[in-house]
Length: 172
Image: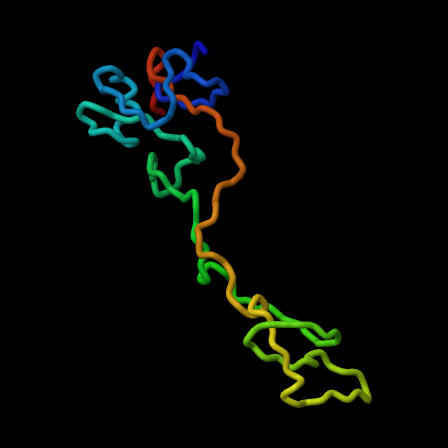
């Protein structure tokens, strides 16, 4: 790795940062120890900008090209998301039932036992006894209200930033 820019970020498969590189783990560095790197990235990733600055923290994050809003260095997105009714499109669930076989059912909601239409010349009794109770699982709300994982499949690798001994990145 003879040629690289100070502040350049690369992905490495080793469990240590190469010489003159540091993990992108949000570590605070002393400006006086790395003045050239500070002049390249400033304190946009943390630090007070007087004595310290931070390298980017890419642990658990996906690097993405900067958006048009210019939010360079601003963490965005979430690892978990609470799915609410407002997030879901309007929809219905259809329940079909009949009591062609005897059995025990439980529940509070009543539905005509002969819900499905009968064929020609069929007799369907329309009385209170033709109602059956449905299981609460058929009609009740489900879900626990907990957030769900929102992360795409990933392969952990080490992002490292060039600290020194590289070239200063020229401006266009």
